[in-house]
Length: 94
Image 1 (cartoon, rainbow, N blue to C red):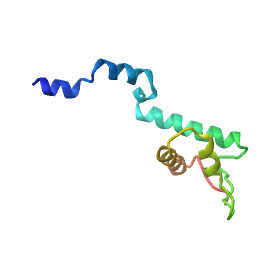
Image 2 (image 1 turned 180 degrees about the vertical axis):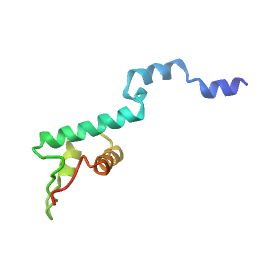
Image 3 (image 1 turned 30 degrees about the vertical axis):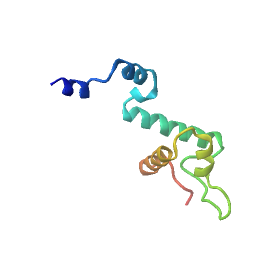
């Protein structure tokens, strides 16, 4: 029985660390913050999120430029970018 309690109750120091950081935020809030940061950087770079220019061969595209400025792990950035595309918040020029 004590083993079960140990598995479900984190040690006090783990709870304090989680409360102090972004880790305590629910996933939906994290996603929203990630997406807002990407959209902010797109605007900062002078692009419209719903009218991104297509990448020209030999040049970095907008996604690569944004990736360099956003402080997110590569996988997290990629998933956030795809969520924005799937929601229609990011689109390429026709």
